Image (cartoon, rainbow, N blue to C red; front, side):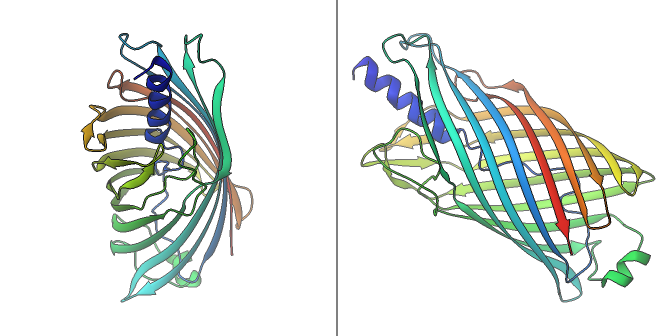
Length: 302
């Protein structure tokens, strides 16, 4: 394999493993809501990821930058006396990737287009009774456990002859369990999930990309200043996800820990937003990116 083909393969695989369209949860995402509530969210995330590579290769690393825009709609309803919801998420991404210190392959590869649509079903298991808006105003929050199931549909833009794509050309399934415990003005939350992938049979031409499941656990400690203002400390651990290309093991198992903080606010009873920042503080060398992420969100409920 020539140096250029080696570099392009690393560039393509690094961009595929770096998944800005599969963001972690935010603090207070899974807390109870009244039934028959509609919510619309708009997100913007600026994400920078840097992955070092083995020095035996003819370049030092891969940098990936993404501007991510997400529209998200949610509707809550009741099933058997418990709170449930359905969500539809549509991302649009501007992604670029480049190699470090590869003078014979300069510049960057990029793509700007729609990402894969996600559909999420949510159902509270305990601590989230189905309440009307009037009943919810009188209700005192309590510890909860909520289950969610995410389906990523391969609707995003994908071209097997391009190094960078905004769609993944495969299905993904993510069962998730979220929990929260209120204590005075504090909320303590822990979410865990696993993501399972189907194969991409048109990877980098006509190759087959397979990926083992990825696992993650996420914690938030948030403090309520007022009904309209809260702040949180956030942490996420993620691992797994080793890939094979045509059954050739890539030895690229992921493992990372990130820390961050979030600020949530309401400007009116219906309109609010959030600002969050996170940074990788520990990761597996040569396989897992070092990520810096800013996210801005506004939401409207009716």
